[in-house]
Length: 174
Image 1 (cartoon, helix red, strand yellow):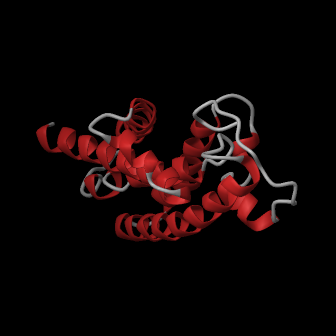
Image 2 (image 1 turned 90 degrees about the vertical axis):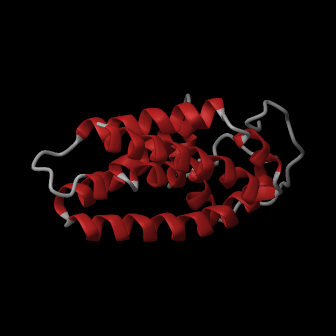
């Protein structure tokens, strides 16, 4: 079943393990109810130790690097997933993992010079990203029309950028 609710023809071949793991964010896409939320939560859980224990700039650059690399791998794996599971399959949640990391990018530098961890920024990044990913404001929905994994990733990248921008604005105005 695709995210649009339409059934799509799929191949009977066995989906290779590596792209399957990448497309499903290491299997969390198979969890019941809201696989996109699980993909975003995985991103948050993988990111938190880095944020808590690495220096601010190491955390920022590693987050950016992981985002870029997983975006490339996720686009490839998501494109392949359509061959096996149909157009924009709901279990393919690598796009939500990437989008959440993008939404978290401004949190790290904004905490420079702050003694306490701005937990509200971390939580807000998750809430905003999921809201923008579901709601798809400002023409984000049109990005889904791009072919294959590019379209699957593009709308979540845009939702992550929008969530990160809102967090950045709130911190500047706050």
